[in-house]
Length: 212
Image: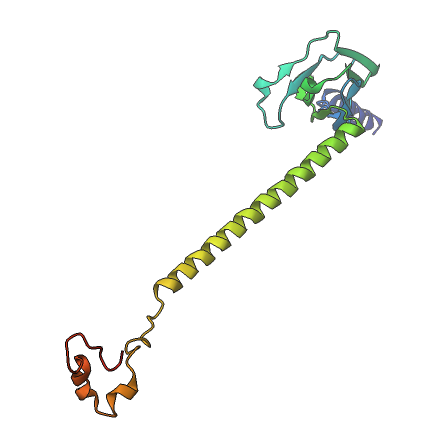
């Protein structure tokens, strides 16, 4: 019985010793940075295992969906430096950041990639400059409103002029003056057919017509 227990314990120890190591998990902190220019930034790469013997590399990309082969490897220089905080954490330090440093930074532990850290860099704006830009924007909005109102007024005025012109073209003629100047008293109460009598004056040719 004792030999059986010893054999089972031995097999358990052997299975544990030859069992594969769990997959290495990598995280990056922080996942997002938003800073102004000329600041310093530190990005951490954390692993579930010790990183003393591991090769850690840093890469930069423009977007998350950019292919791995297009990511640019970061070389240690004056702006970019690497340092270790503890056996399971390594840092990328970026000094005096500029607008050109914005992007996504990935750490790579052997063949395992980190999730990435996004860095956004903005230029500081002085308060007077910000107020000036705001006033300029408000002025442009008011100017656009005035131009739009002027265009609408011009269209309405032009349409009104066209309507008035059309009304004047189709105006009914005035026919009340057809018989103007013919005095009824000179007709003597005769019928309309007898008006031809008065077409010529009585007597001499130079005499005036009765209605004159």
